[in-house]
Image 1 (tube, helix red, strand yellow):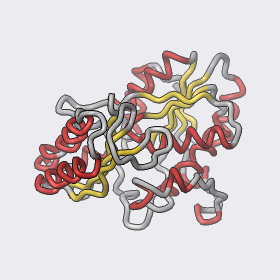
Image 2: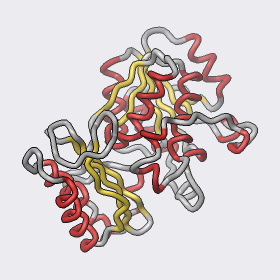
Image 3: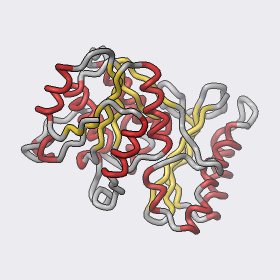
Image 4: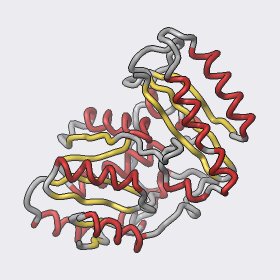
Length: 277
């Protein structure tokens, strides 16, 4: 399994590759959720490339860029055992040779990016869209595989592919959860034992909200759940019902709508979402 460290090596590898290629972009510190996306990619393409890169452009001031968990050797071992075709693990100098401030950036539509996580993390989705587009140009995959846990990110990338007339097929893998319901995330390893015991309550509240009868008032139900989460120790950023396609707020529950939540436990910001059956 070749480890490609710069765009030139990646391009040479890509030119020699035979068969369809699926691409799974990650920030590393791989867990079972990443490997589920990898298996989805394997099921749809003959070759799979995984990227491992912690993108500074999507982190704001005071966020956890420097403390974000990194484990390249362990990640390479997991991917090698899984049968990955190749790994692209560039440095900041390779992708931003003139620095991030001098980088041309992709501005997603405000209706998708300036809401939910975009309120607490201004510029985050600009950084996401920019790095995904850069990687797509470098990798030239037939398919791009993303996870449902980062659903707002998925919708923004989906819209970018449409708006910029890119032919890459987009696949979305379902959220992978721990046995207690917590959505898998690389950041979960930074939770203390006490915080880890509390963390599954976020998913539990979303699950309960998804079971409300159709046409229930979203606002009052969300506030009840939010108060229970605050009492449990969460610092809540948002808990909202949104349309799955437009991401616009909804006042009443309906099948196909989606509950979104983001909350902090100590140094860790947890996000999750669930669709109403």
